[in-house]
Structure formats: structure tokens, C-alpha cells
Length: 122
Image 1 (cartoon, one colour):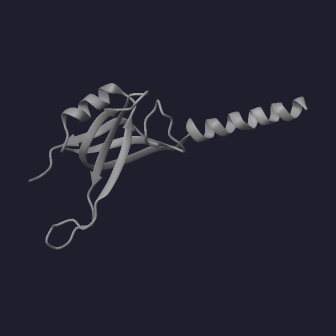
Image 2 (tube, helix red, strand yellow):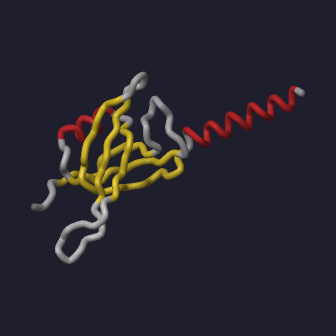
Image 3 (cartoon, helix red, strand yellow):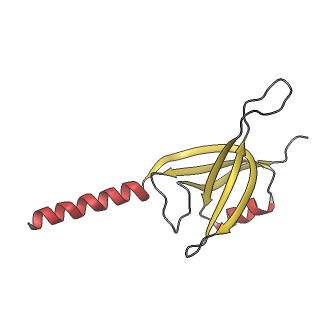
């Protein structure tokens, strides 16, 4: 009986680690226009943001598709840079996890660095 409970405990611990702490993607980059960044939450205050990626372009130059990338930010310093530069084009490095934790953010995608930032061409 002890062996069963020990095995169950080890299995549950391994599953929780895989689901919430093991990065599914270690090295991902998304690029697009920063739509917004906010600090929100009832109990756990987290930093959240949305990046609008460029869609398929028509001949007239108008986009017909818009891809949204919703993410969480772990570091307040990164959040402060994003907060002050809404509307600019960013290349964001992120890690993707199998599940979201309430104190880490609402998203499975956690931005851990800013690769580049530039103003949009107008």
C-alpha cells in the first residue's frame, strides 16, 4: 500500500512539474505591434499584454487577417518598457508552458526579454 501511494505521489509531482513548470518551447520569438500592456488580477497581480502580428496583405496594402498574441510578462522592468512604448513594433522572446499558473500570468506564453523595438513606418 505504501508503494502505491509513493508511486501516485511521484506521478502527480512529475505531472504538475510537466504541466506548469516545464517549458514546452524554450526559444520562441513573436513580432508585431504592441497593442496594450496591463497589470491586472484579483489576488495575484500579473502583467499581461497583446501583440498584433501583421496579417496577409492585399494589393491595396490593407490587411485581411490579424493575428493576436496574448502574453504574460514576468519581469517588471520589461513591463515598464512595454508600457511606455505602446504602438511600436516589438520582437519579443518568450517561453511557452503547457499550462498557466495564477501567479505567473493568465497566458501560457511568458515574455522574458525584448529583442528589438522600432517605430512603425508611416
